[in-house]
Image 1 (tube, rainbow, N blue to C red):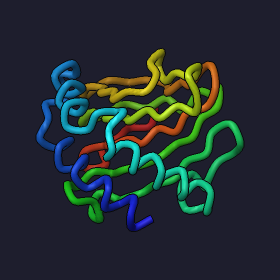
Image 2: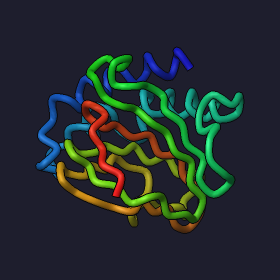
Image 3: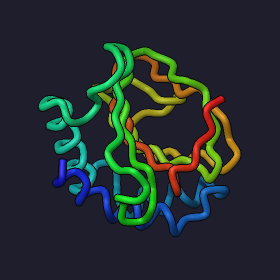
Length: 153
């Protein structure tokens, strides 16, 4: 898990510099710094999936939705809560993003989508609310909440 945490540090640092209310610009900045098909994301995905296999990542929940915390804000390089969820054709609990949410979507195959999108960065602005939904298969999602700010609806 320490390898995964160190791989996520530069992402956390970037997340806290972005204006998450401008989702288009924030997603573009994330994609430019960490392309979904680039080496850093491939390393993050490999490490996260190894953690799933050894029981240190996504070890809570049930078969349709397994989840875990990777970093608490006080342990993160930039004070983000960094979590992981592995969803298979499921809806998660509704929640609001007090300071925004940054998601890295890592589908198992070409059919799975999160909120209608495939392999990508997705930014949800401060104050937004959603019921996270994966359709068409299974997907690992890593997500950042600046300062751990979230409100469960």
